[in-house]
Length: 252
Image (cartoon, rainbow, N blue to C red):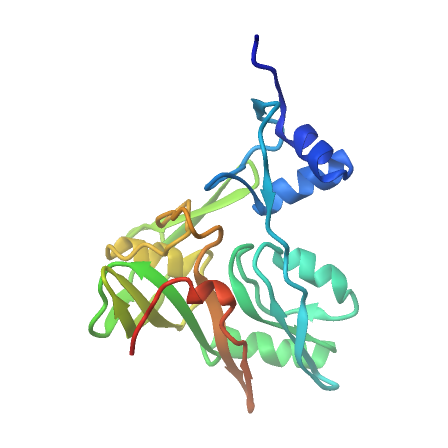
């Protein structure tokens, strides 16, 4: 009997009893897997008897709000623009990659926006991330390498480029080690596109779950990178680590 094939989004729509457009959206968000492999192309041909698993996207939570600023806890699998659409009257101050979770800030008026932009431009905003990487980190590492970002068919891709790159600095601190994996803290002074992911990969410490710059894992379906602490002016905002960061048995 001949094996039948159809487009991935159509088969997902049938399995989940959702519209084709919703199925495409889920695949584009990166939350659909077959076994331990993420489905990347919605229009890709796949066996008709394929069984999909779909990860539920966590809800956006408000961390803090006053007359000047709104701060939310962005879940993985939502883009910064997806989050911004929920708060159309506010002005986005910082972006996170789609699979990166954590602190996102919005200005609630133009005056505060201008002041915040100046803080970012002067590198006076404290930005602390947590990540799980492949490799042992037992001492502080300073990565000071310029990054060049280009776009191909609307997709941003960054790399170390000593001649054309923009200045970028990341400082890595060890937190916990288990086997050949490490949980680390990263503090960045700049904010280049994919900066932490590119910097860590450049020193042989790829982030677990990062299919572009890092290393995939069968039990992980997202980049294990989280924006944990941000300080601006007299504010400090903290986002708790998501449950995905408990997948490895780290000991202090």
